Image (cartoon, rainbow, N blue to C red):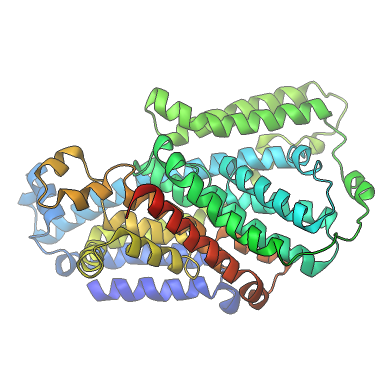
Length: 472
């Protein structure tokens, strides 16, 4: 049964990676994989765990009444009433956080709040446009998230660049910039959100540690491309594009307020966590409630419009990407099953034994994230290693190595960088890349030929910058 869980996980991964070939949505595969692993785990608990398992023994010591039951029922209590509920609570925090963030972004986008930023890009010089788009995407991704930023910036590209391959090149830079911008912010990428919510990193730790390496991972591709791009982009009919489909229901002032409220709600979350010590998802939902109340009041004052034209949160929330949320649920539950059953602890000890270096381990994780979604990779890394405490450090036989796993330690911050930026190497390696691929119908081979080496150069340059900044 122990080996069967590994086989199920690998087969599920293959189907997720080949989503467009097998024509099965990756969310469906992830859900099946996640639930199946827990089923196999509980059915084969006695052979997988054994009575001497450390976690199981600790559970029995805490609940002596369970020890009076038959051994199989003891395992059922341990897995169904302890492990499953514990991990589901952790996963739920991430999912509610994402749902709140996606709804806030969607309500701002539906009211064209982001056009306030994008419509101010007017340059036609290819090199200047490349840098403007790259830098704007980099910083926007740190506030929003890489997926949403990529969608917003691709919408801008369609307004200003009519030629497909010129637009693809800029879209490739958007993928690199969105992933780089998301890596140094606790709310910029799903993986950093996971690490932040779990307590592996803090806002004060990740931003100074990763801002420069993340910026370098973008600057290097921009510099290389600056020597090859020449001329100006072809003129596009901006005026008609801007007028087409513009929301006439709300005023420009209301659009500004919604943008400010949305950004403030996202930026408020770290402050909420530090001030109240409550989980970040509660701060995100509080921000969502404020945006929701504002839109309800705003539309209540507009009595002369049809109710179908009112883009309130209760209507817009139907547009959020629910399959993506279910995908994260399935993936995280699958990884948690492997963590609870002991697979990840075994993998961790193997990596530590043969590599014993956080740079080697995280560099490999980053390269793998270009092939495999970075969410399960980071979830697996979190399962392989726990956050070290000062108390454990004081009694450790190897305190120098254990120090790397303290909160904001080098292992966790470098993991955030590698998992975030490594996904740019292939178009399928990140949520931003998959979104751009779908929106622009970009070819996998074209991205591999034109963008992958640029992304890889930036990736390794960022790791080198991190090493110089933090020490090997």
